[in-house]
Amino acid sequence: MAAPLSMSQRNELEGLSHQYGPVLYREEQISPGFQDPVRKTDRVGEVCMVIRRPSGTLLLSIKSIYPRGAHRLPTGGVGVGEPIIAALFRETHEETGLSVRLRRFLALISYHAPDEREPVFHSFAFLLDETGGTLGALDDEELIEEYVEIDQAELPRVADRLENLPETDRGMAGGSWRDWGKFRAIVHRTVHEALSA
Image (cartoon, rainbow, N blue to C red; front, side, top):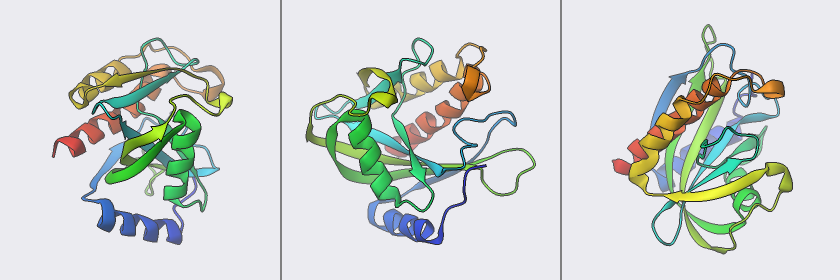
């Protein structure tokens, strides 16, 4: 299970919701066998980077290890005790090379596994406006193969595609690509709802 949120992270989230809200809160179930990233003990959750380019489109990426067509909103881990804002800007820089301005705290999704009372993982989704930089991953370990841009209205189709990935084994990461895709689809649907409100 991921580490629980620290008191300072809880306080930070409260401040962010007041300053950059309104925030859409969701509680979601995940399948019992799903492991990566929700069972990593070095993190409390992830930031989801909803990067709006100057054209108004949103940025998706795909890693070389993903099934074909599995483009998604970029995400990155929030370490135990790490300020969420620090993780957001660090991960954005590492995964895209872009400078951004925080516009909105869109959503906080808490994931629950069957028979577990406390959330096992959290996704914190933020709308970011691109302000500069050159698009490209600065961390080769991210394995980013390609970026694409979509209109906001396409997010439900992205979620549909992710939910219907093949039922193939993910190898060392555990579970199937379909379980991973169903997990990843949740944030896309939630972000679309928050942006459409």
